[in-house]
Image (cartoon, rainbow, N blue to C red; front, side, top):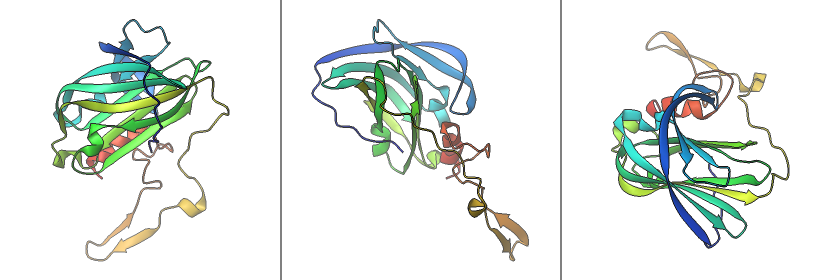
Length: 216
């Protein structure tokens, strides 16, 4: 889940338009075409990548990146312009792990849309942040339209104080799915081994969010 960080008063602000190009990438266990975007004129070793899975169910938006220096670090915000039916947002941020440590990633307008918002932020991989958010049962919701803040990511100055390990799907006997007999339909039923691991590849990551949002 996303965390929330206290942002100090902004001392410097710059609005940077995303430069769009198609590339192939692999991130968070998923592969495929993404929309790669760089910070125009940035001198802070940050690069934003906006994934094309953000446009599920026909949602569209122009995304603007705004970066600001805060009292004890750095802040990146993703803002939507002319959004139409936006129901998801998937992005990565590459950074210099010797100079910055990600602290939190929080959602914006999608959290205020009708319905529940599924979120996941991977902040413990040195040099890259991977985040995703999608409306649960998104075909049943209109999504976000208009202009507004989509995400805020906070970085502290300096490298992380300790190395953390990302979670994996459980593999112990205690986590096995129980079997149940459906007498009405005469069939044997069981849940996923790990319900958050939608594609059952033993990893619970951002690649699982869109199918979970569709079949939540």
